[in-house]
Image 1 (cartoon, rainbow, N blue to C red):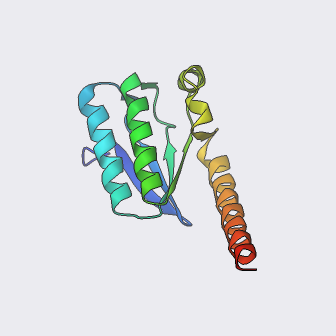
Image 2: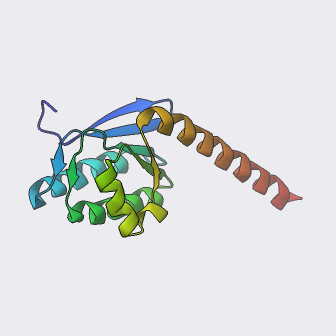
Length: 137
């Protein structure tokens, strides 16, 4: 996070892993910066498959939940997908209380999230191919 960024990005076999570097995403200023950084990255990568990694985050403000919904919508508009991982028990509880755990796929950590995400993408691609083949017949 040497450049003042809240989020760092890396590619891992077709999945963009965005690690939230701030221990807390609390105030309006860094929530806004978080949203802008992720949205900018998403806009530059149509069809992105984004894994947001919260392993370094100890606290989120409720404003981040709104920002995550905006990001998810932007990704969907770009024909991409998004998942979350490594939420603390407390943050996970907030997602459950607000039913956001029904909207976002959430994995325990990056190590389990990446293979599951890759497999889900493979299955989705196979289903799309099957659907196209059967529509033609």
